Image (cartoon, rainbow, N blue to C red; front, side):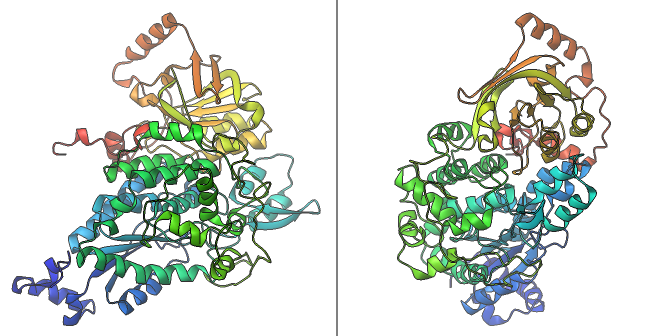
Length: 617
């Protein structure tokens, strides 16, 4: 008799009641000798990245049953950061990651499921499920809903590709007519799927592929394309194989912590740096590493950022390329192939296919593959028709993008820069580090010095930017928006986008203890640690203070004398119980958010729970 976890609830006379309830769900006596595999689905009608997932669980379930397993599906919550952004709803986004991880743990452990397939797509959902997979350490496969097609429209008699950021940016530009704004709004997000640029959702889905827990194509195959259905079919079959390898053959290499090990995390982060992905991925990888007891921290990321080339630019860092173009160039495997040729990744580690990365690249890297099927998959193209229906089109590019000199993916020799698209900065204002997406920074702004304009909420900063209170040469400082101070570490796409709308993105910087959307571009520095609410120096910055930023030197400094620092510190401490809290911000904080804030660590620790605050760890 196999020692499945589920045998706890399906075997023995004392489990007759549990079996009666299982039978009420449709199971038979024959099913009790099969593995019970959970399908963790994040379908919701609130989110375009998830609106098409309702039926996809059934596709996976059928393959699990054909392959000899029993499938049982349940749902998690899913918050759309784009819809929650710019108002108090964004306070709930990052905390939802912990709720998703907990809900998966609760369902899996309470019912003793043997394995799981995670169907996710957007910002906090993929990270929450990844944290759960590493926490539970049972056989797991990830398959995302896929990216949406980029929007297309004609503006001033020119064809233009669009995404979510364009809709936000143009709406704040006073020179753009209402007619054009409406046209962009109607065209920017044309299909189901995660937003078409390299924002957090697509970045994370690329990283799960690089880390080995998702199948090749997971990060880039369009949600609308018929080829994406093959990933769901394959996931259903493969999860049963993984389950049998572990439970029947005692093969521990099938478990998430042995697939997503430290070397895999290095590969995933190297990929992210090379393609200039969302800074949020750093937050989520750090959190996931702690769930899996993997020795991977911000210092590892700092070292990788200094030696990894920037070889790929996707919207919002480029107006030329969106996810559909990255797929045409070979997707994640295409980038990993170039990194491998530069000897920058570990290729001996295995993935859910039970192949080493070297073997996987030999088959799936478009620059070396001999497989016509693989080439055909990477020719999968957008159809350009508005739809919420997955797998509804089969358009193909005429050719693959193999131009590694000026194409979507470049070789090491032709890289945009020899250090990557993300960087960790340190200095007196960020002793534990902060993060900048260098892929979106103008070369003239890599070294910047300006005078502080301080705001104690995202809303206050937005109002100032739109009312022209921010001018060229300013460093916009937004504080008390960290995990504890927000609480919830709001994602701030609006302030950075509005700076761009006001033509200030190349003449201003923005620093915050909050975080940014993957859609952010410009000199935008987030995750400043320690945050203001944890007595970070950012809490003591005043209007007019001089701040220096030097990305090549990885430094950020507040120019203040020791005497002035001492004076400001004492003045802040004199506020008593209100010290290191916003002075005038009015914000309603629910009990749920207060609970999150109490346990939340700083951004350099991934904003996970501080286990030291628990009586039992």
